[in-house]
Amino acid sequence: MDRLKICLLDMLSWFHEYCVANHLRYYLVEGTMLGAARHQGYIPWDDDIDIGMPRPDYETLKKSIGGRVQDGKYLLETEESENEDYFYLYSKLYDTGTTQIEDRRVQVVRGVGIDIFPLDGIGDTEEEAQKNFKRIGFLTDVLTSRVVAVRDGRKWYKNLAVRLFQAIPRFMINEKKLMKKSRSFVRKERLMTANM
Image 1: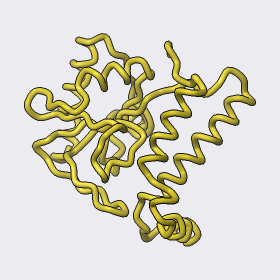
Image 2: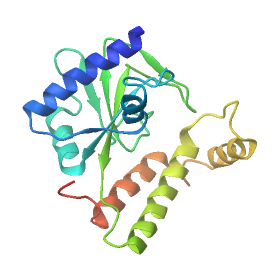
Image 3: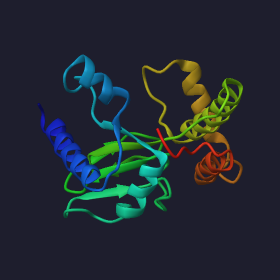
Image 4: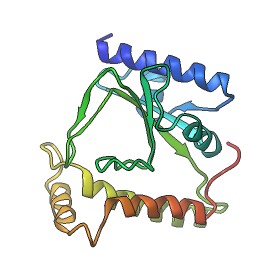
């Protein structure tokens, strides 16, 4: 394993111990889960760890360690972050002794990190779930189009959409307001679940 993956594994070990000690549930998700199942470790080209937490556990984690350095090296930045370059609808746990640069519209410089996603309900019926999924997906797509970088290898029309969305002035589409709207929608529609 390279140094990045060793660092991520150390972070995951710390996170696991913290969750066990505080009775918090979490799951490996996305590429991390796929890597564990298919590769018995990491997907070779993956460069982060993805965690999902049921909303109540996620909120408890944010309240207990959000914004404060843990064990002298780990910092949890949440979607409520005041930092102008934080445009994620989830939290990130960083190793403050490292540096990682994300190439986005504005470069994001933080430590090597674990992405921690809240797991929410999406509705009580299939019709309700589809409606809510479309609404959340739309808000997420608009936000993503505002903050990602144009890049080689992406379909031309997707890069065009990114350029068009980024040309719209911030007073018309504000990224932090989009994030707040998305969080409010989840709360208003009672999509947050007590158990998973």
